[in-house]
Image 1 (cartoon, rainbow, N blue to C red):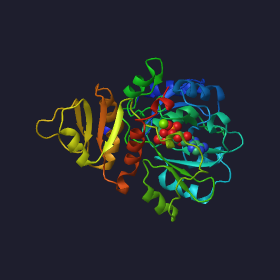
Image 2 (tube, rainbow, N blue to C red):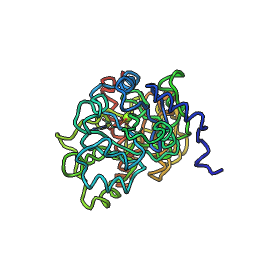
Image 3 (cartoon, helix red, strand yellow):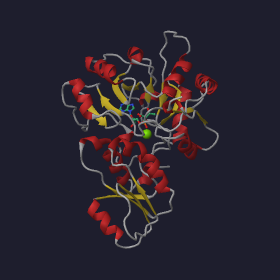
Image 4 (spheres, protein in one colour):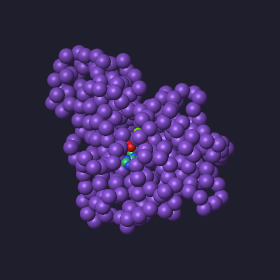
Length: 337
Ligand code: TXA
Ligand code: MG
């Protein structure tokens, strides 16, 4: 058996999770990016349970997870050619597209906006769950609405254990092992003319632009709300500082109750509370990032100090999440119940 399938849950576990979703319950499940907190996207009561569990404001929209390209027209209208090309290139995979919503899409899912976020996840467990949830094709829209399975404003979970740490033992969690990518999907808004990058993520800007043939626009004041775009998102509870390699050296000159995430081994007699040496490859760094932040958060240190990765395109998603985690130093409580 290959490693990729090591954590595939049993058919019975997948069927049980699907049955719970059909019954209007909330179930946490793995995707290739992060774990999601899922509910039947056509069931308003079920979707409201997600908001209650997460402590998320009701006007923050959820992504609808679908099986594939064939589902786009079940959920969206006026779908631009660019969206079809992106779906063909990236689905199933870590790309969420914001498109104009079909009339039936619940306001609970869209946060009252006229758009809907759609994504076809690539994880083996996520697809198996979607198939089991849908059952035999019935010509009705089928989708699982799911935000990341963390409390609002907190670090996204990349293992079943992280989800349990967030929500306790009562939540049904489909355990598919650690997520392959570890950072959330890239979000592109295709609902208003020129495609706009709302959140960098698992699909790179360069790869998306190659398919589109034009550069992605940047977010502006008219861009739709996305809670992942709040400055204080993705933050651990311990204050986090993002510092240059030089500033890290200065920090290390005096012993301190800090937890360090750096891309090198500690040298000499360094007295800090904990130290994690992160991979220097951006994909592997991103894969480990949330687990590393959780470990450092739990270390009892007064501050987390992160050595800033290079400001290069390959690091865009990682740098985005680190900047938000660092912004959480002030005012995190505003977001985080
Ligand atoms: O990788 C991912 O995208 C994970 C997995 C579980 O699929 N999901 C995820 O969901 O990160 P969430 O809710 O934590 O972040 C999705 C972001 C939110 O900031 C939300 O506001 C935004 O997508 N979003 C969803 N629908 C939207 C819409 N119609 N317009 C604008 N933003 C939207
Ligand atoms: Mg999230």
